[in-house]
Amino acid sequence: MNKPTDLSATTFTLNGQHAQCQPAPGQRLSEMLREQLGARDVKIGCNAGDCGACTVLVDGDPVCACLMPAQQAAGRAVETPAGLHANDPIAHALGESFQNHGAAQCGICTPGMMASAVALLRANPQPTETQVQDALGGVLCRCTGYRKIIDAVMGAPALTRDAPGHAGDAIRRLDGADKVAGREAFGDDIAPPGTLEILVIRSP
Ligand code: FES
Ligand code: FES
Image (cartoon, rainbow, N blue to C red; front, top):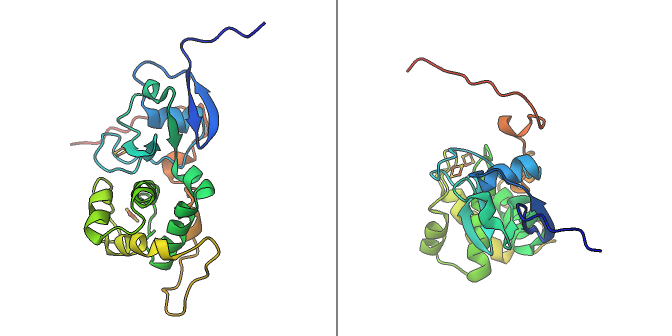
């Protein structure tokens, strides 16, 4: 006899694998991915749809996971930056190009940039600079001035998975690989599940 279906469960694919969760009413997709499924590669910046750090692909389209109700993932294909980097040669080439161009600096925007750029390059393998700017327009970066990121996206199609760097490339940062793969842990990423929260209230 089949196990009865849990009607409150949200079932979808996460980076190509079956996933099932029971999000609380109103829970954000970003929170479900991070807190219930351990996807700490989905970064949280503003939690308000402004910064794009939380960008994931849903059925191939970039969305701010902090704005999407978790239940809306039902039946959809969700891809996170780490999954993209592991599974998609385009994302891997992008990661190499980001490192070659010094486009991942503090790294908090990098997963969102990478997810947005993968969606662009899947649809348009040779984008113009304007198309790159448009595709990345929803993700904010406070470190790079965007030039290095745009150059990295435009340089990615020329790279293959095994291509080495070239003479004249900028020296790679030692911590770049973790940033482009979504493995870099920031303050909000290292709290173990169940950690009590502290609300810090400062003087206005
Ligand atoms: S955390 Fe989602 S847009 Fe900033
Ligand atoms: S690399 Fe720091 S915000 Fe973009």
